[in-house]
Length: 107
Image (cartoon, rainbow, N blue to C red; front, side, top):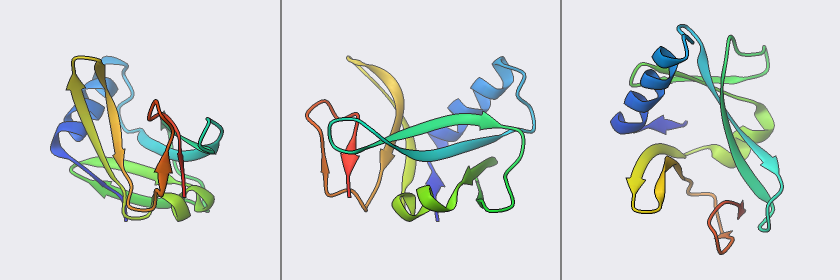
């Protein structure tokens, strides 16, 4: 299962409203790349595929392909703001290490 914090859900809804993406879900996926091996990717999508895991948490629909789900199961998506910028943060219990800049991970 994948969950989303109230702060992240509010930000997703704000973006959807600003970009007129009503009714779309949030696609979460893991892609190969980065210095530690994997990167996260987020974008809006009209509908899930027949193979996707589907979640709805705090009013946000989320779609995850089977390959990504094996790396994302148990993850919480948050939105953080700080001195060095703002963005979505994945708290993933499956991660064993991250790169120095924090933008990629390994399992």
